[in-house]
Length: 308
Length: 308
Image 1: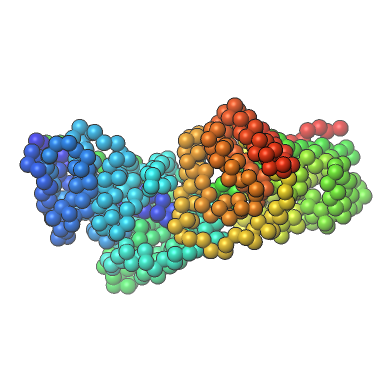
Image 2: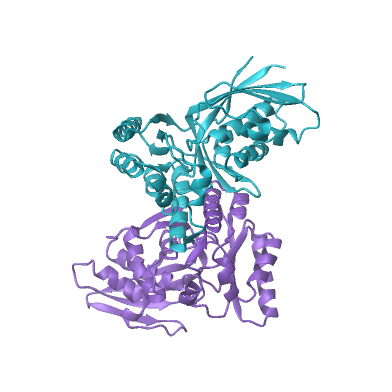
């Protein structure tokens, strides 16, 4: 059978005030994958990158997602997978989601699109469980649906695609390690009701701002009084990046997923580039390795880039 | 000077998952007020109803709201007010908001519309502070703006009018007393993070559902895992009203403000009437006095009904 080549985008979960329920897909970076349907049962994974990720399917996020999908099939089929990661694992930019979602989207295409997008999110969540210990869909959903998605509920799964106006996204990935499981553990199990009220006022404002193309409302709503004050302590330079980005015209921003990447949303490309320069300046001064991106919202999600 | 006559609507604060930030205006019941601008300084209040509310301006919610407005005026003017309340105080249907908002809207009209709607909300909140001890705007805002409003923030004030599809509202007011201050005191100061996440997923879904005219999403999002489980214990019959209303086709519903009124949203008038009959049946069986309404969303807010 012929292979299918796909591009699977980086994603930003949480979006400041939407912890565990909002996510956004980026046009950069994107992973590349080549997936071939085979009559030979089983999953064979090759890596075409520097990250030395597991090739045993049961230990690989793409592998377990695909195993989850294959449980639904009547026929014994197999898949050969070549993964070329451009989204660095542990960046906070949805690297595991890109692998898990990418492979099930590719497999579904090869199988004649027998599964719904919602099915695919469900399969891919098995990969997230392997990566972080918890089934979550706030990277998987925007990766598959594109744009900005709300995951109102995981059990049962309820995904809502939210229209939004064009925005630029400046991202810096300071090359330090923040494990998702650690970032989750430092959160308090209880929060003040008054803070929770502020947070749900903000997420309601953010959703309304997206849907009404109201950049001012988006900006005012991009405030996180619960997670960011705790997690930002794990990211050197966070406060300075945020303060100087806001001064340079960012609408708002914060920690990408559980970090360490930091993102800033902008209305204008100019501001987004200025903010990238600020990010570089800050981590150059700290002599900390980093990578930056200036990109836009990816409204397509995973794309089939080439069929041979 | 000529008096102005206004109608000031009942409102439902919280809207299930939007505690302290969402509110909705109703077409029924509505208070009537007649306000006259006078050269004789001071505020003179008369009541044309059975509720025996205070007439001293400093002790009357309309009086303190109007005093707040008058502080902004350069000239010493006075107002004569006749209030005919149809929204029973303590019903949970925004009775104090209707008085406080009604009088400042009427006064602003008489003064040549010198204040913005936001200013008027700010003045009227003084009335809410007198009534419940806390400045809140989730009844005041829909009363003045009409429709459904989000109060993203009170300090600084940030009110967003949310478009929504047509809906019917069934309301029952069981004639028991639930003081707003008591209803606030029984709430825990801390909530579980996982419950807060559920709540902000729901409010995000509800806002998206309103703006996309998606009745299914509205229905799925009308869930309150934080306030209702505690407060509903203060309202006899609540669980039965809710269960039987949902079975009869309600989209969802819950406690109106801090209660004791209960409201149910419906897509169809038939269902709303069936639910009213269910509400009557339940409180007849409990031998508890009650009042019911079947009404719609009031998109105009306070209206000037007649100028003499």
